[in-house]
Image (cartoon, rainbow, N blue to C red; front, side, top):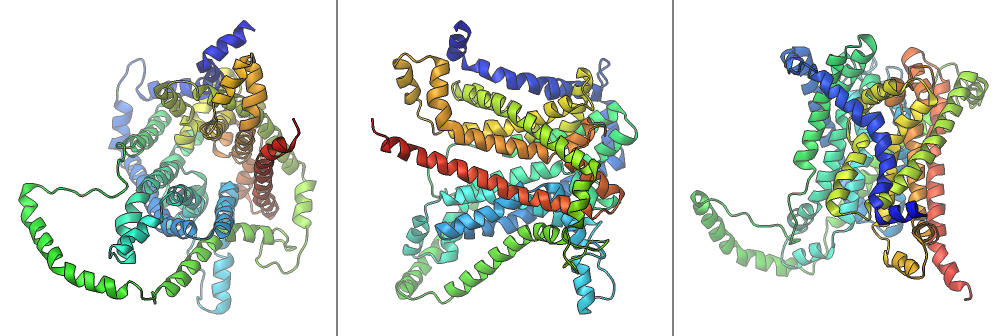
Length: 589
């Protein structure tokens, strides 16, 4: 009992279990990698000098930055108008569109990459259609080049751009635009001068998230790109498998990690509080004052014309609004088709009866589902994924919930620092996390074991649980705990009877995301399992590289339909949480 009371007085102790796993599996191995890159104990920068001196290393690094920047720009160009149109739609339509955006985000990235290999291949859906229509005489090179890489990366990362933008845009007061128009601003001027500046935090968050994740892309460039599209993560993986040189691997990994961390430090921190919603006016240096005076004179001269035009157009019906609405609707529809089409193709082709995949199938059959359930290697990999996912969910949910609860009760500075430490596994490039986990599990003697996979997956899954549960605790009324303690309830009883029921939806949501992150993991699994323990995504990835097996379509179909189950579970949890207060009020005292 004394220990429980001590924990209640020192909530920071609740973070220790999550930190112990993180440091043993990732933190200390990262330190070991850094020392290897510096040739410890001699300590020299020879490895880094060699990396930047070689044209191969520099070209791969620059190509990684270029591909990541272009993919981020494409996501922003497509995602910004999509998020804006979703935010301005009706509540019911907005809910449907958000679900359509979230569905592919919850679907396995490996499945979506495989779908694009089927769609963009020489005998894929697009080329077959164009050949059949007689538009082309030979297949177009849509895959194994930079075009295929961009298509796959944008499809995977577009939801990560839309969701942060939508979160910010939804909170912008739309009456500000109307106020701007009432002051004489045309719709496009009000949009650029009012709405766009207010949405810049979403632009920064979405672009930062997409760019950092793109830096560590491995599966998509490997599957859809050619030899010329090698990224730094692919280079590290090749060094890891072909010629295990700790110094070269450590140097390349820390160059990639340093690049990601530098971007986060430069653009991830807010520059300061914004005291005004209106965009600030910039004061030019004294030498540019003549230009400002000329602009001021022109503005004064044209003010009478703008005033007359405003009075004339104030009560007129906008002729272009209908066309803009139609164009916007078509644009959103095309984006939703782009996001959902690969999953639909995989589901439909999985019912093909031919020896090769085709869309649409000539006849429908369940033969590939029978092949999946009748093959022990596939079913064994599936049950391995289920067992490991359940174990990871239990570990990460317990430790992540404790960590989130402890972090919510400490000072702001300590909370921010520890939160960034816990989020390292999902912020750092996944290939760097995989290499570090491999070294950490070697030290623990757990490489190639189920326990090692559970620990390696748990560090990322715990980060997701901490994020979701912390968001739930942000709206928690701490006076309820103080009221329970005033009634002589102990810390443990207060948590179990008061806090836990109120944050249960967040815990269940964190558990669902923990299971998804474990079940879908490929890169870390391929590095730490030693191919002695196959999970379903790892088995699928190996078959994609070695043979053309239509059974993959059946597996991809099952993984595509799984997000529907997750969304139903989350909705049921939310609905029960919403009805709980009503039932409590209806119960007689």
